[in-house]
Amino acid sequence: MNSQWQRLSFLPAVFAALTCAFVFAPHTARAQQTSPPPAGRVKGPIVGPEIKLPRGSYETPAAEVQAQGESAARLSVPVKWEYCSIVYISSRRKDYSPTVTYFAYVRYFRGGSETIDGANEEEALANALTKLGDEGWEPVAIREQFGVSEGTGSSTSSYFFKRPK
Image 1: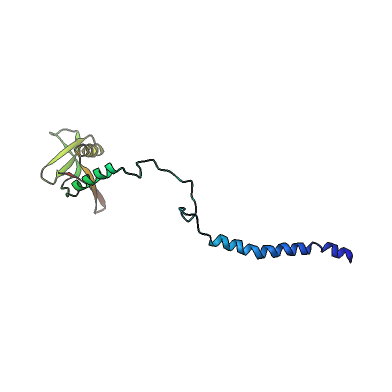
Image 2: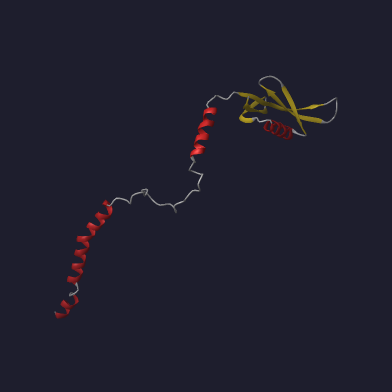
């Protein structure tokens, strides 16, 4: 019988330890839940280290702010635009020649048009796009037209551009 009590003699110590854990653990857990986050810190998970941006990427000196205000005043006047389009790309023979010349037909909405030549359709389009880009035209839209007639299909693309007057 004495050996049974010796085996169970550790129970009061275990009981005391568990009692302390149950008594004091809820208080510390509650204290952790109710403590506010440190000031200046964003709530939520931290994804990575804090990143310092170089000066100029988010700060603007006062002189630049004033210059931006003056340029904004100039920009408040509405800009007037002129428009043109590459209407189609086609081919032709010159003077009954067996060789075919490809061209892009450019129409200016203020009046007038021109053709820009190329060795094939892609080069004619590339030459027209390059010429218009060099002249300050910027693309604003592309219109695709598809057609099907008696089992044959066709498609044409028109490219629209604008630039300040």
